[in-house]
Image 1 (cartoon, each protein chain N blue to C red):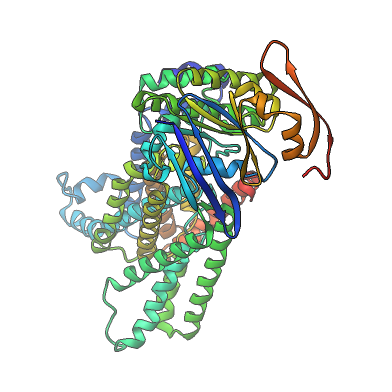
Image 2: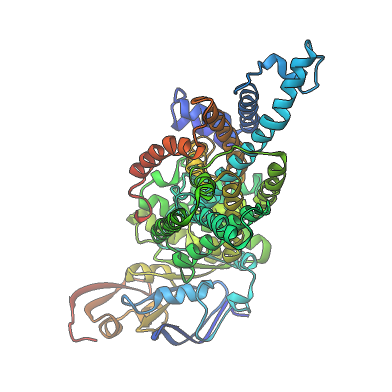
Length: 367
Length: 265
């Protein structure tokens, strides 16, 4: 675009690092950079852990190079294929889902502070999952483990119901009120958490451990099966981007303006809501409640590439994947051999970030 | 075919009748100012015309079809709307916002049209500014440029369109108010049909060749400015005593209000 390269230096001083970064990232450099970040995070995640695998042993372990010591290569291979790689796959997919669902939610509700974990969509999913653990146990014989897919399904349904309730609460006629949406979300999160508290109260020891998993969030116990189960949600996201990306841009001007410019607003909102619920539900089902990735990632990216959703959504997915992968690697190493719950870690960094955003955007949208 | 046909239009919200049996037709290329006191139903009329509100009774036809009968995308090619307050929550640049007027279309031709639209509102050189760092009046002009681009794109696709303006000059200084009148007149010269809600009666007289006066949801007067903007209407509809003069050598009234008449209504 010629206009940009001509006009940028005229207004922003050429020395401004933000201006230079933006000009660079506005071009084709964005996705290679993000993919590079992701690869670095993945290599680190492969290498670091209880059984350290130096980077130079990874090719041999994966069968890409001739091993120097066949026994070590075989052991590395076992660790990588059965433990680290599935966990990396799950972290990448869940990070992508969390960040992208945050970006969609922010666009849909015209609010840079919206996040599925913050407004109770994740809690709704966790409540349904916890209910499945406790009630499911009572209904079936104690000894029989629950079918594998029940928890994810429950989390998905819980998230969908929560999102639907939120939308009804926040919608009045054609318009959706931002402030009411956020406050209703807080109330719903509180309600869902109270429900989880009740379930904790009646749960036995084993159920309690399972429920704690939902509340704190963890990527432990990742398997290839789990990765395969959530991968379709990521595919659905990328399939939907061409249909909702431009519409979400228009929605930033308001629902009325989007309609004036030819967007079928109600249809767009329905698609976005189902996507948010499906993506959040899937993430909750396999990693519990992991907050703030959905706020931090899109916000940082908007600073660099601007707010257009057709680039923001795939970029959020990439960056979210890299960030969650790095966070998970940190979570399982800083207190090794114990694991810090990843939801605790993201909240530790994300919540102060959110507060800073809140203070800076106070005047916005009647908040 | 008229650009706009409104027949016995009634809009009810709850038990309140916001518009009551409103009828008028607008020919292609006409420029109309809608005036009236607060709560007369001006904004409701504009929202009904834009397709945002469905009529409770009666009918609206834009280019031969009810707004709700047009698919949103087709409707957007035939009518563009400038709302009073548009807030952009995310840091889009001025150029990005203006280009939204072109919908899905993009490319060099659109860029040129967007530049022209920005130049027409005197915002040349603002392309890369973040829109919410501009003043209220400047933002309003950006949105006017966006609407102009939408109109121009619609004109290419399906002929001259309909332009709906909700108090377009509310936050503009005098010079840019007159600029807007000039741009609106140029659109009208190309065949665009314009309906504008205007609070400033002098501006209404300057902008429009026909004035519709709304009062309590009904049409109180409808005709050229010289016939509709006069002492009698102002007293009856606005409850204001005033002296309406004439600009010399032009059939254009001007208004000097001097006293509110408490019992005028």
